[in-house]
Length: 194
Image (tube, rainbow, N blue to C red; front, side, top):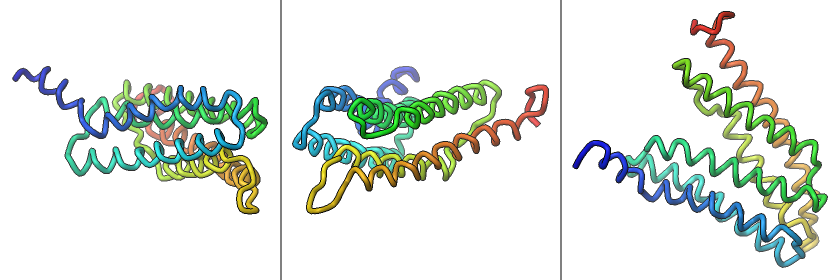
């Protein structure tokens, strides 16, 4: 088997399939969130929670099965960002999240993705930080109750979601600043590595 064929076949593995499932769920969320009532809100929250579990699972399986691939390194963060941003954008017209916060979160994601691409071109790898991982967990933890939205068993899930969302927003901004700090510390004023 040629090297190219071996690399191609190694990309088709369970972790990468799980990332593709997360990407595929994004348009489903769009459809479900067009006009969600109580029932569809519950379905959206459960679906979102289930696919977010695959985020942890695909990383675990990739390491356990020794199937970490370049494609997987691309698909995993793409799937996370697509799923989270889709849910947030679709909740704006439902008045479940403030549009300005979502705009800043999306801007941060685009800026950090671009920054990491520039760093790679310069031979610098900016690994995901602990702040970045906490940010993702906080965003997911906020989105689930925001998708639920309604009161169940006397619990106002929208209120809980908004409280967590403020924490997630703060972590999003802080982790974005952290990525830029790491980038500029690794470069001198001329743009060369130190």
